[in-house]
Image (cartoon, rainbow, N blue to C red; front, side, top):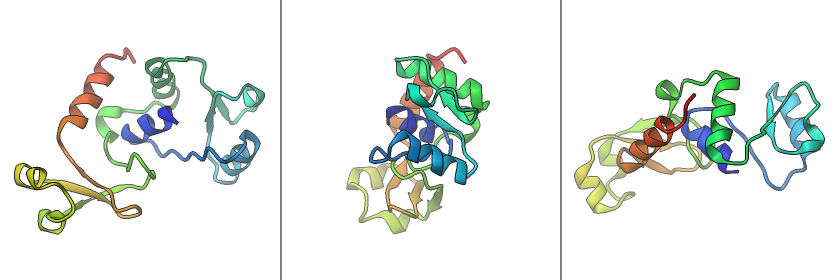
Length: 138
């Protein structure tokens, strides 16, 4: 689950559902023409499965970014980290009652997930994400 959230933060289109078995996820991935990223050893031989070898999140991210040729500097922070939906810019006035007052006072640009309603703004998260990316040798 942690890898899925990081991949979303990097802008990748990722679905995950911990209530489904590996076989069920593979069936969905095949129906949607997606690649399944997993650590389930029972699925590692399927051609449309990308088996993650590493245990640490940094090595997992390195594997996924290399395999899928993601350019995190271009597509990062374009998807909701919670539900995977694309983010859209939202007028500052529309979020005044949906974010803490200090956030509203100190930020001009906001993005919203139209599916789950989560509001995003630039603060320390992008800095931490870029620091994490800088620490990984892609």
